Image (cartoon, rainbow, N blue to C red):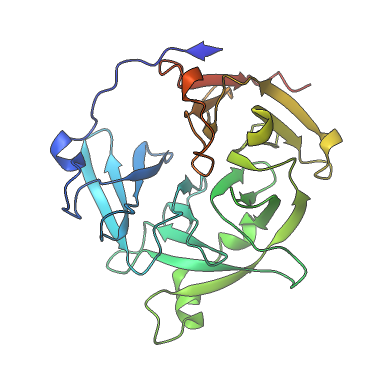
Length: 293
């Protein structure tokens, strides 16, 4: 079902979203999420301007900025994903950010008053396991795992959120080398196997299925996590050449899954699909709560 997009208005003043070279402005927003207090998290990661990536949190009720942190020393090219943990931990709300480019994710904690709020988690694995890309992240509320994949990878991974929620920045400080400006900790990662193909977008739905967009087939698919990552354990929920590229998924309060579509997959710009593009159809409903069985 295609939903015509409503007229867009600037949430923040246009001056704060100008394309100038003021690093305090929003220059290139690459990811958004909203925590369970209704606060908007923004990941801003400009590539063409020498400004660091940054995380800004806004209070939507009072229309004001409440937190800002620069991600100094972090490569900006592939920072395209931000997901907020629904569980509030000892260190406040926590967000996970990918991809810093070195088989890691960035962890951002809001409760560290007066300290740097972020650190890196290095994803350890056996030498036989493929390289970990972290462009797409999705949290499973049911089995308490953080699923991880990348647009440059066919592999799907996850880490145990129960263990991760007990890791803090102090453990990262202990593992860091003195000469680096980035603090690290480590976490074991589970390799689930190979996806059906190159994908964009990632979401864990309310019945613990993992949904992603299969680029080559123009299909939104769902993997049943109770079984192994094989083709027979996938369902095709939507397939259409007019769905040019789903880049993000969201689930609403009624457990419906929605997708954001864009005209081109960012690593496949040589494919001319713009002649099929209808700019009014940017939001698609994928499936409702009872549609999987």
